[in-house]
Structure formats: structure tokens, C-alpha cells
Length: 355
Image (cartoon, rainbow, N blue to C red; front, side):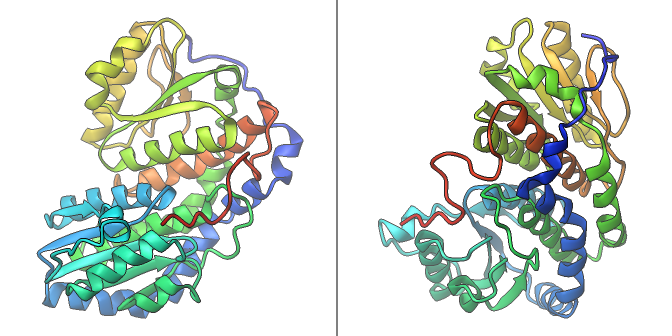
């Protein structure tokens, strides 16, 4: 496949959806979050440095759980503290006790109202965990459970597909880690992030539309910090575009999943500018050699045999936030191109209350 093809521009109606309007607010939402939570983040950083937790547990579902995956990579990379995801049924179905003394529990939710999430957070709180809540609804039950409340400040999100709240959750996790680790590069990158998000949303990924409009199956590839946004992109393709997509690490996909990649199979690869991105670029080239249709978002620029999707360079840990912002605009246009409504996917509600 050649890197040279005529871009298929997004249809004018793409800019009229709620998903488009809300995703476009990503930069402004992050700026609001950082400004509103400055004092709370400083206080949390001081606490975490004075009383380092032995472990971190995240509590989240759906897009918020993908944000939690990003948080795991950040915390373990920058601080070395083991981070895991709570199996919420342990508390909500089995009512089993948890061991959480001297741990940090980070709960992430747009609504803060799902019963299983609340049951898990309450169980960790009673077991001695310090609770941090990243939640968009400040009046939610989750907000009331938090020792440190970090309102996402994303504003109302009426489209079923979460966009700006997910982006703000990623930025919130990066802000926690930047303060906790005293990493100046990450802190500087966060200050520039709102402006970079505006630029990322303006990038044109419409060259991917011809391959994806008629697709039935798709792999989304990331690694390290970008694996979380590969997960999110795969979910959004299912959710808004009725396109079966699976997310894989570039290391994992070399095992069994690679066997089904044949001539014309579409691959969306999301690379960062660090060594983890090298793994994504290597796999992209390997798939391209098999005549797969590889769509590569790459801050390092075009690679022969792949279709290049432009991406911005930043601190590598923050580049996935920019990648997913560019992707949201593509997903919105792709949904319409496939004859769907990205704001109202069938069988889905904005708030999912899982017991």
C-alpha cells in the first residue's frame, strides 16, 4: 500500500454532531481541570511523597478503565509502585473483603453512580485505602466517598460516546504522577497540553476513511503508554461505527492474533516517539510486508508501505492523549460515513449502572 492517496475529507455534517463538539473541547476541558484542581493536586502530591502507598488499585469501567490502564503505565514507569485494576464483582457480587491498608485507590468515572464501582470503592475505603476520585459529576456518590476529589470539569457530555471526559481523565492521571514524581518534563508538557490538544484535533486523519468505511474487522495497535488509547480507539470503533476492533500491544499481537492478518486486513497503529513506539513501528512494517492495510499515526513521520496519519511530538507519556484526540475526529466522521449516528449508538446509554 502506498503512503500517497487522495484524502477523503470529512463530510460537512460531521461537524454538527455532539461527539464532534464535545471532543473539540478536550483542550479547554484539560485547562479547566488543571486550573480548578491545582491546590488539590499539590496537596495530594505532598501526601503521596510523605506517605508513599505500597500499591495502587484503580477502579473503573469502559473508557475510564482504559484511562486506568494509562495510569498503570505512568505510575509504574515513573514511580515503580505496583498498580492493578480492581475486579469490581469481588465487592459487588461476592462481598469478599479486600486487603488495602497503606494503599492508594484511584476511582475514575464520568457519572460516579455505577453500583459496582461504588461498592468496590467503599470496600477499599473501609479496608484502609486512601481514595482519590476523578469524576465529572461533582454531586455523585463517588465524589462523596473521596478523600481527595479531583473533579474532571469536562462539562456536560450529552453524546453517548465519552470523549472530553476520557481525555481529561488521562490528563488528571498524568498530573497526579507529575506532582508525585517531581518530573519537570512531564509537568512542563502538561502546561502545554491544552494548546497541543487544539492542534491535535485539527489534524486530518480522513485519509483513513476509504480503508475503514467498508471494513468489518480491525486491529488497533499500541504499546506502553499508547496501549490505553489503542483500547479506547477499539471501543469507540465498536461503539460508534459498528466496526469490530480489537486492541493489542505490539508485543502481544506477534503471537496468535498475527495469524489472521492477511492481504487487505486493516491495522490502525498508534506510535509514540519513544522506544515503545519503535515496537509499534516495527510491527506496522511487518504487517505492511504481509500486504495488510496499515494506517500509522506516528510522530516520527511516514514509513514506507503504510498510510501516514499525522501526529504531534510531545513528552512521550503525553503523546497518547494527543493521538486519541485526533482519533476522535476520525471516529466521528467514520460513523457518519458508515450510515450511523455517533451520538446515539444502538442499545447503549450514557450512564451504565452495573451491579
